Image 1 (cartoon, rainbow, N blue to C red):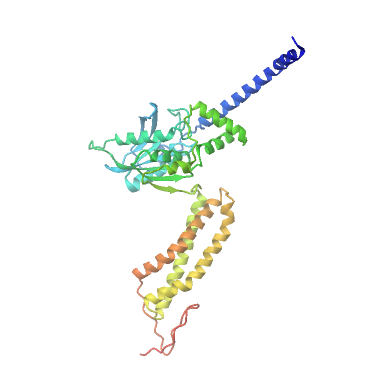
Image 2: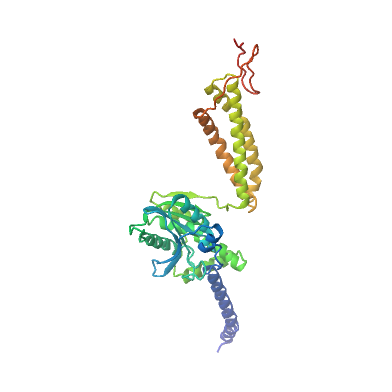
Length: 394
């Protein structure tokens, strides 16, 4: 045997074990990532119907139901029946969450509308899930369609059809992506509320894989996505969410939320916003009242008050928005939600309330008698255009 061939065989024998070890390490690492991503963390339910009833003192007729999925498996969720013939609302949680995260929201919707509410657990989620793995949106859209078919089979106490011909779906993150995929296939989905929508299933996979490994490497993520597609036999949708939304041909009403949680600090932002807007409206109404007390006709008083007070209110709102923008743009979980709440509210209220307040004042004007002064002139508030002075005759 020639010396070169012998050297080549020796090199192959020397490097083959190393290559096999590397391949096994890569396969093992990818298997771990796929397992970690497809098996979301399991936690006890934050709240259950029983614990909610004990805390609130209200007895809820919530039942634990199961139904068949499109691929012949079983899915489950809580069901709260509403009025006969009323629409139904399905609440879909985020990746890593479970149905209990949206339980309070569903109860409040039922209390105010008497709609039927369904809280499904997405694949691989919840306590001891019936389907052990998550497909990151690949099959969850079909699971939602199966849940809607199950709702169609429900009967009221009068043995009539419980749910009407309209459905609404509220989805968070993975739930929102699944709702988008299902909405084009079922024309009875009339309303979609999408919170914290992901850019694509690949984006969600990259985020979860990075949390599992502590690495944010593009090559590792690409190999892991390929392994995930092999594991799910191609049952994962890599289309961007915008492309999925473009396929919706049905006239569903879609509401995209900002992605920030309604935390305690955000609630403080709502309170602050209400106070700021009430203060602006009070200033406008009070100034209109002052003009009317001095004898200015109603329409002219509303017009002058709107013109004179608009600029100070606008500058005050602009100053507050400018001061809050740095906090909002830093994307800090503590302060950013509050900042966005106040900024969005100031923008809309500054424009809308300047129209609504004068119109409401015109429709429901307070009874004000002009103030009479003997031998004097009509005093005009600071900033107003002075009217010609006139003597009051007695």
